Length: 398
Image (tube, rainbow, N blue to C red; front, side, top):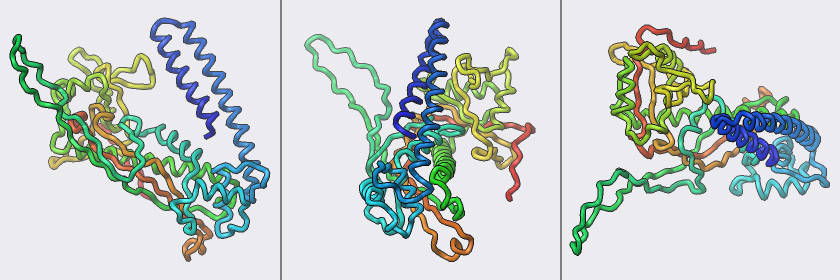
């Protein structure tokens, strides 16, 4: 995605937020005006993207060497290197220069290693935060080193100062206490096999295929790591939920009041189905639509509910055979931090019997990150006893 397109998207989001604030304050005319501006910006975005895509497709020219009188972007060089792998003599000097300066990995060009161009990487980052993604709910910190540490203040609530009489000696007080959080970036990745036909197709199609695959894999990886950390930090402290009072106990007793206004609820499809049918003592449903965002549901009237597919967060059975749907309540941004190296690499190979036999190319992708618990008191895990309620049927393996 180009800088111009990102700027337009940013303007759209800013105007949406401003329109919502005006609407909440009762300024209907001002909100309508901003809504019309958003519509115009969306049309501008669509037209700009269409023109840029057409221009990029012309520049790529079906993977042939880029003309010397044209500017070579990182993406152009990336696709040219892909299509001319093993035939470096086909690359023009400008493409070679771009590869040397921006896209070769750590001085090992002979293995076909390339970093994902900036525009692809940014697009993958934006797309993986959409859909059912947990990353937006936790804290993400960009790091430039493979390891490091952070000092986190613990027990931030302090005792009050003592009274000091006139001319009396001031008493000593205990200073702040810190806990060290270490991180060590780990490598994650996999191999994508594509057909020779797709590999030799236009750069635009190859780009779309890569972006789609990378988005799904990186999103699934981060969702898995976040859920794993939440389970680790709450193990042995789970609270069983059978009634609305059990939910209130989690909110009022088990969770620190400091997270009262920043909490969210994460659960799977069965857990949401149970909550959606639960009523309080007055016969009112405890899950209500958000008056500001109609597509969002709230628990307690304040906590947004995030529904995770049951294939990602499945129902579990305890030793007694009870079906329990996991539910997490709290402030995930205070609980978990992703230390993101924000570097993604691609290496490719078309040699080897299996690739040659089936006319395929192997693309190896890797990224580097670590995830750590910062505050294990910021999230409480509940286990909802769903009893005989229906569950999501697992799809048969093909």
